[in-house]
Picture 1: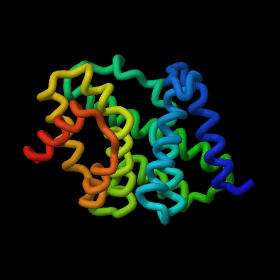
Picture 2: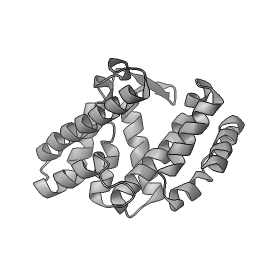
Picture 3: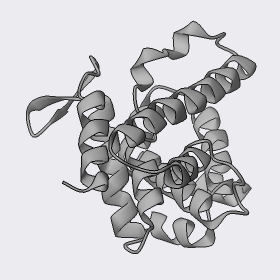
Length: 194
């Protein structure tokens, strides 16, 4: 087994412990395992030539996310940002340990950490690629459910911020995503305000 396949297996094994489930083909599957697989699939679809480091970072993007619940931080925007930053550090630390166990050297481990921490977003092509995939996965798999739980203006504001983080290529790829009429309408409204 290569270091890459070992690392992917370790990431998936860890995420399989997520007690939160999503129903896939009638079967309950660990939510973060589903997310990790969606990240890998979307990355290979959007950028088939992505580097090994980007592929690893995509797969471990949310590793162990359930272990730091959103509810442990204040419900305001400041609390949200603190939670997100804590999660990035947590994901990076956890992933680095698993990469080392998988046989990776420090150079690749540091590169994956750099990506998971979203360093130099907009200026580093690999960080931007990872962010594009995060945004595309959100739009494809999570937008409709999110929109059903929040007021339209809040969703539009979040979509505007999401689109602002995306590259021109990623924005073009949004047109290929199948969305219900309501989600598509919100996305169009956000695009007009961008």
